[in-house]
Length: 166
Image 1 (spheres, rainbow, N blue to C red):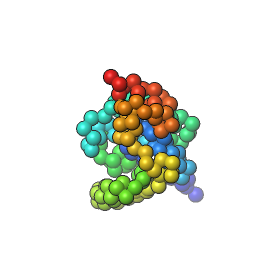
Image 2: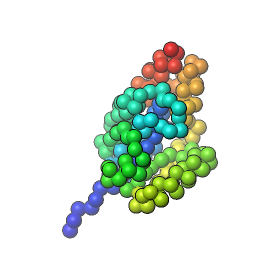
Image 3: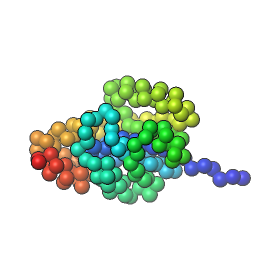
Image 4: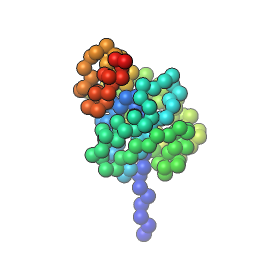
């Protein structure tokens, strides 16, 4: 009898910055899959410029997810489905907060299925306490001096205030 192939999923995103909502989705995915690879998009197409470098975003995620033994963090700069194939993943897992997320993700799912029908897209609904949370919103709040320490991991909160005040 052959050993069963490990179930590997990719949780992609720009994570600029990582929020507690992201950590929640990744943690929940780690309970379902044998291995979760958090894919940090090097240069996001939908965003002009990131506040944090890919290396900084990777480091923030690695710190926030350190207790999850089956989670790795990697930076990627190719197509998501290519990254998934390179890592032996059979699923892409993303969080959904609202209808607007669904519309965008539905489009992306169709394109990804055209390129790699063997890779499934799976969605985890945001926990109620994070359903409003976005990286953009966190940056805007921090820019105006609001306390975001309960919205992002502690290392992110410390650097975020400093970075946006410059």
